[in-house]
Amino acid sequence: MPYLTAPNDIKALIDKFSQAKILWVDTEIADYKSNPRLSLIQVLADSTDATGDAIFILDVLDQPELAKDFINQIMVNPDIEKVFHSASYDIRFLGNDDAQNVTCTLKMSRQIPAYILPLPNRQLKTLIETLCGITYVNKTEQSGDWAKRPLTEKQLEYAKMDAVYLARVHQRLLEILAQSYPEPATENLAALGEKYQKIESQWKPLDSEIAEVKERFKAAMMAQKLKDSSCFQLSSSITMKVDFMTLARLTQTQGIELNFPVTLTKEIQKQLGELISHPSLQVEDIASWRLNSIVQQRRKSTTKKIVPEPESEDLTVLGNRYQEILPEWKLLDSEVEHLKERIKKAMFVQNKSNTSHFKLSSSSILKVDFARLAKLVQSVGVELDFMVTLTQYIQKQLGDAINKIDVQIEYITSWRMTAKTVEDEDEEIPF
Image 1 (cartoon, rainbow, N blue to C red):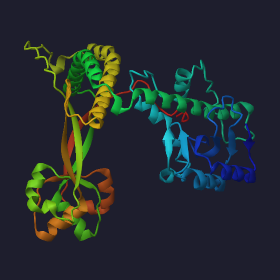
Image 2: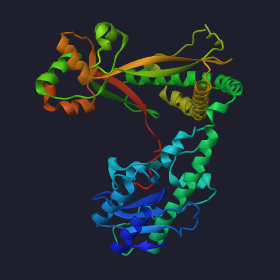
Image 3: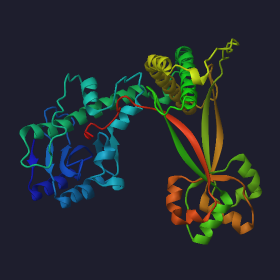
Image 4: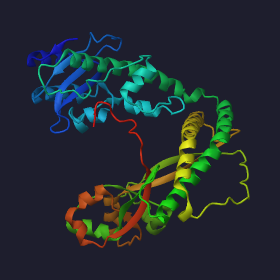
């Protein structure tokens, strides 16, 4: 485990690693709460290393020129695959949006359906213990003081082994993903369809009940004027909308170039008429594929279920029932979605629009850039009548000019589940 502190040694190693095809990389951050800055970069080029002997620890604390050299030669190089866990955090200090060919094991683990990988979270500690048979991973140094020098032997050991764990988890995830998503061309659609029907019969009643409990929860909390309960939190959000022509004229008079896609609904297409084929629009035709079960669905029971009035709902009883069925529903729901995805890909690759269980159909979604559409309709004097949602991105682009138009504001009550524990949090960030 070479621990490098001399700038010349670090630069020489970066030069060497700039020729690698794949690197497993981890970082340690000093003063992450008050003044976060890069302390260590741990690099591994040999995935077979189980002891950490092949790990190189680069001490770059308060040496931004060394970090910049690593970014320029490694992070922005598209020919080198860089593997991180929760990469979005590490690359804040290693190139941000300029980083290329980055693989995130956290994202990889989330691609694996919950029924195949039923874990309480996707932290590196959990993954290494579950996937690689290591019974206990010591993370006591995780929140250590990475700004102090010299570093302790325990800190260096911790930093070294994290990169080893990362490489081992990465290899196992690749294996599991390959097993989870077989080649679509060789999928047995009849077997998949039969499996789907069996799982769906177990999933549907739970899915229906989950949806019902959520709706009752929402109605009851609103009626009882509650913002928080044991399972859910009610929150309000604001949606800002403006008439398309108003926004088009504003951007023209203010010289603002807004570039975002506008979906051309059937109504908008009707208003455009022959203009839709105008070459300046450069309309993008996106194919959307939908998988439908062709097995006759059971008729719903005509017996009306008696549901208490929202004002008198017992939220404790509802919450207990929700928590009782949620784990089983989550596993079945992940399996249903996984099977549908495999079936859709297999039917598409095998060029089949029908099987004994499913029908695959396509539809087109037409999109055009706002600036092109606004320029065209104003040049020919066509008035389009539809509303545009002012996302945060659009609001930022408009700046103070947004105050010059009549914006319609919709207050929408949304709701989300209050997490009991933080799942899938990057374990390198203790806060």
